[in-house]
Image 1 (cartoon, one colour):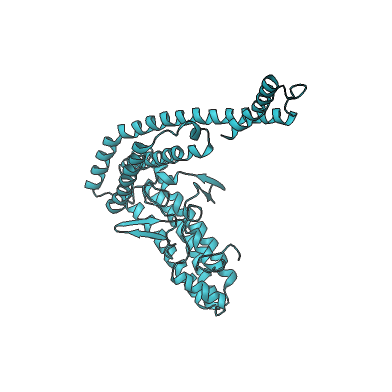
Image 2 (tube, one colour):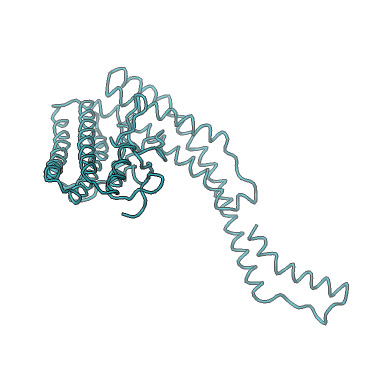
Length: 360
């Protein structure tokens, strides 16, 4: 609408002036609109051109959604058969089932959104806001495709088929990110500590983080040598992730409990009440981790892991209370969160609602 207004303002002004001159003889000559009016026309043309591109993009997006959804549906039967065979064989049954159930629920939600998705009307399609629904649907389809890829990767991993090393490299990504983040939390704890016993415990935890990283590296070697089964290796990753989270939660509670200041008491109350809300920014994995062996960042796809984590299809954490455990529990599902938010329990002030404010 803005584009049409800008385009038509000057011509309408000119038309009215010409009409008045022709029918009423008003004025000696037709006065053309000021040059700023024609600048407005040019701006309006630009706005309309951009809007037209958005409209074309919206139509292309509908076609893309249809194509990607059809491709996803086309392989659904194969994915279901692979999943059934893996569960029947007892391969990482609980974790894989939780992963699959979340993806199935997300599949139903995305399918319903696609069924209800309608292209916006002409004027609405000229707006940037019309792009949101289509982008969200495409993002949902991408996560579902990653979930299917995880099931197929699990088949290759449990069979030690060619490519299993790539699958393992992707699986260890979230665990290394966990350990790096928890090491940062230990830095914060170390800076806050006044009790010598807690300081010693924090230092011991930092050593444990290093040991956990060594264990993860060793797991890869044991897999290579056939000394551990793939499903057992995944369970060991769960054990490491749980152990590190449990220990750092104990250290956070002990540190907050020793702070007798009013701010310390508020932080401790918030900790006990899980008063921080989860967001994608503070709980989703970042798609890369630092490798000391390679001395470089290693990229991976957290949405395609076999283990159920924040980035997996069907996980919606926005606004949920941030658990001290670093794990969301719902029924049989255990969703591993990037525990970055734990640092906020230590460093942020408490606002009137009990949540963390932006100032330290």
